[in-house]
Image (tube, rainbow, N blue to C red; front, side):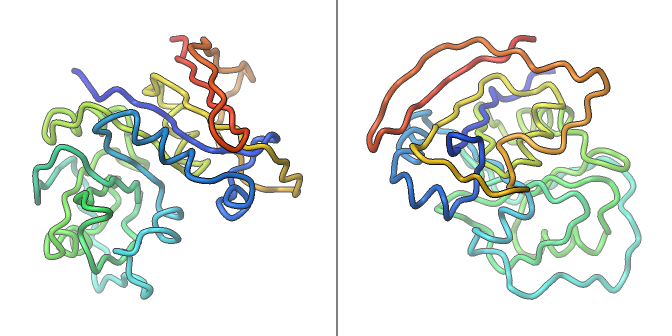
Length: 228
């Protein structure tokens, strides 16, 4: 079954860190200009990034009265659109008081551990969702459903490091689009572009360089395709 064409699009320091306040100190609009140049592209973030950056997320946590799991694959279409703001929220923790981000409808991807009550919360908020994966989200299957039921053709993974790592580990990434800002973070323990990958043979993911471009403020834009 087909799925969207998937980019990982990230801005990093020379030492591979992705802390947004640090990036703001050593770069400007280049990241968003490059992202917009990719065309009509849905965007996906992880729960932590959405909690920090998405205005539609409430400051108060979602507390369920019942924790009965949905326990099966399902989806809900609140709105059909050319592009979506997609959030990966495995267990359904984010409390939503809006259903759009920058004019794009919000769509949540969750595992089958999510509670039935949480799905009712999303439906009442006018938010679409995809539920797949028994104990963790089946990203490969979620991408098929995203294409089949919502018509998404292109998707940019825009952070953070754990969600970028999860997509790469799932084997669904077609292109790595990395912007290197002219600075070094250097702090111990900071998140990198790809984090949390479990690979028993310790072999690297192979890439093919497609283009190198210097843009404004001495930022370098590297584009690679993944070698399957």
